[in-house]
Structures are given as C-alpha cells and as structure tokens.
Length: 358
Image 1 (cartoon, helix red, strand yellow):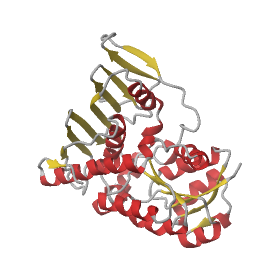
Image 2 (cartoon, one colour):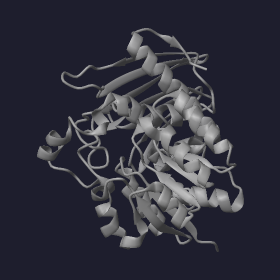
Image 3 (cartoon, one colour):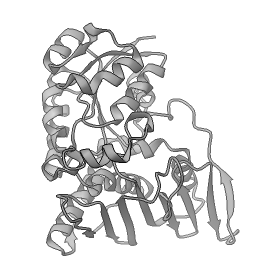
Image 4 (cartoon, one colour):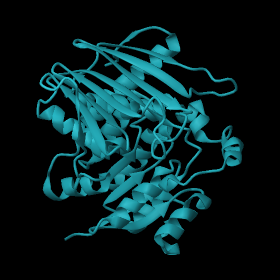
C-alpha cells in the first residue's frame, strides 16, 4: 500500500494539531513536514509527533519543493483560505482545508477554480461531520424513518476559541483575557466571529440533512459585544420552499460540549414529515419520534468505522478507491453552505431579510 505524504501548512487554527494526530494514526499516511512562518506555533506539534528539524519549514515554497507531498492540510485564518489555496494548488497536491470553507462566497469560488485547474481533490473538513450521533441521524433520514426533512434546528459553539488549543487542552482564564484583543479570531478582517466560525457547520450539515435543498431567503441577527469587532452570538433563519430552519452560533456557551453539554444543548434537532430526531454533539444516544411511536425512543449511536471516522481516512479512501467524499466535505455541499453564510452575513449587516445569493 502507498504511504501518503502529508504536509501541514499554516497553524492559524488550533485544529492543525488534531488533524496531524489523525495523520499519525493512519497506517498508510505520514507527517512528511510542517510549515508556519512563526516557528513558535509549531513547537507543540514537533514535540507531540517527534518531527525532525529537517522536516520543519517556515517557507511554504521551500517546504513543497523539498517534500513534494501528496496532500496538504491548510489551517489558515478564515479570510486567507482563498489566498492559501491559490498558493498551494499549483504544486499539484490534494488539499484539506480546515473549516470554515471561506470568509466569502467569492473566495470559495476562487478556491474551487484553483483546484479545477489541477484536477486534484479539495475537501473542507467539518469536525461535526464525524460525530457518531450526526452520522446516525443521517442514516435514519436516508432510510426514511422520519420522512422528508422539513426543518433543521441547530445550536452550537463553545466557551470561545481561546479557551482551548489542540486536543482540547484548556487555557487559563488569564491567558484568554490576554489574547482576546490580539487573536485573529476576534479580527473582522481575518474572518473572525462566531458566525463565520460555526454557522458553516450548521448550514453545511443542514444542507446534507435537507438532501441538497437550498433556502429561498435568509434572515440573520448578530450580537454587538462592547469593545469587540466581531459577533459572539448569531441566529440565522433560512426559509425553504417547505418551511423554516434555524441555525444559531455561540461563543460564550455556559460550558464546552465536549466536557459538559451546555443548555441549550449543542447539536441538531431534525423535523421530518413523519418524525423527529434529536442528535447532540458527543452523546452516545439519539432520540427519535415517529408516527408509530410518537412518545419517542432512544437509540445508541452507530459504531463508526474506517473510512468514516475522520477526514484523513476518508480522503485517502477516496483517492485510493474512487469512492465518494463524505457528503458534508464535498465542494458541492460546502458551496451551498457558503451561499447561506454569505447571505446571513449580508442580512446581519443590512438588518434585512435577503434572497439567497447565487
């Protein structure tokens, strides 16, 4: 079996550490190199994965020319996704972009066009897409258990992006306060804010649950925290031909869902013509109602096996066998999600309902 050479470039997003761990765990992949302009941001990865000095770079061009990888993981700040894909795509590599897709729809289309020129694969990773409850919910939807999906209700977030680093390691309150005004997460020009961080999750998986249906129009509201450039709370209502769906994002949840589920609980409630499903992040069961059992019942989540456990498995499986990419990571689904995000941002800015942008 081929060993896939994978390089991690740009450590803006703390998920780089999580993705490199998935590479290290894959039997047919290797961390061939890492690269960031700031050596300090790579120190944890160097220590965690015993990366030798000659595999650590600060110039992406030298990294790519030297290593000639098969796959590049990009964890850049949201507003620079288009820039980084345009930089890396000409090297003829497959690219995994850590969520969200982009800061704007135009930027997403730049990324798509750059990859089309190479004939290589690009995926956008949404960590929620691998959670067993959400995969189980989709299986039940596809099996017709709740009929046609009419509504998707989504609430998700955490205490805030500075409260943890890779592997969900917690950061002190003092460190959070020190970094809040300097971190890119809180810079509007860098694509910061809870809406751009978390809305893409909800509307991309929501599009997957809606079987590709697009809304007609979108209404969104964001908070305006004193002293901050970006939102920490957003609510988006999408009107489809068949009804309304609601997508809510929150930095400042009472607890982090991977430690203790906050209230409201993080995850999805999906309403169909013949039933409902409650699918919450990190939980070991989901709850279902049907016309035959209106009082509802609880099901254990599916046991998820390779290649459906993480994006590295799934991308390598796709490249090896030609199997389809996991739905929420596909460019087609992600672009619909980006249309909704773009329209929501416009609605929040104008404080008016907006038709879905094309």
